[in-house]
Length: 435
Image (cartoon, rainbow, N blue to C red; front, side):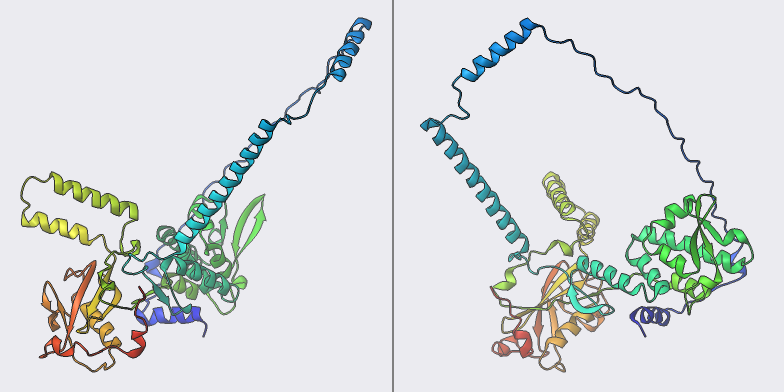
């Protein structure tokens, strides 16, 4: 089974899809709109340009011109100044030009190095994801978008119908994809419910609704072609005409309607991006821009507004005011950085969505232990030990964002007894970050 078919099979298994055909679909929807007449051509008539006739030179004028030419030819002129001062000036200008070229080249090299060199002041270098449907790579979300688009267009030739549904969802903005899908569903439902009505079997490509919501959406025309439409010219206009014989082999309209409704964005799995840190490295707490919901410019503006608000506040804030301010700050973050400190001073670090549960943190720590059956506690400096009642709460609920340090401890034991004990798997120790 191909990756595309596996995607739709999994979608059906996760949430059973109930196809409702018949009375619930209602009457057909006409999507026709009048076309605009073409503009008229303009004609222009211009007479050809005729240059004016010139009078012949008189004998006196000819003699004056000859005398002027003789004077010019006898003059001692030079093409350039060969004095020592002029030569030095020219050499100085050329050296200055060469120096500027070298400085610009060096500046370009420095800027490119700055772009590629990681920022060592950051606690981590970004937020990374996996996409098992496509490959085993671990990449930032921006790079995955490019990879997903390339993958889908590679599958298009062999499975046009199902792949085009995914292209619509993954290669367009959410708003455009939703409007396109609604329109395509109407097209197919009209044909299913009124197979004999000719007006539902063709689409004028100049139609306003078609032009705005379908024609320029990636994947939409590929879906219509797979569903049985083909383009023809009638009365100097382009139409899409439907025929049952043109439906992609192995497909039918109810199946395509089902696929159109079930298709969605290809989900990415957040990678923990586990790091092992020395105590000196754990002092880095600056987060990259990927952790925020807002753009860097919006973050700076928000921080400036908060600073100004604190400076201007001359009255004590009520509890409600403080809670509102706290909620506003917490909503700035999409991801959280969780660090767990072990008794020997080593830290492990992982990336979490702010709405992931506390149990997910325990699972990450457990997967890193050399003895995964070992019982342990995680202690927050603000709220104390995380209990069984906290397991279903999110990091957002317990205010463990944007970053938090949890202490690893063994139940009933004192941490000082384990100062020289290593709890981590040996292969993880190889991940200790270089300074």
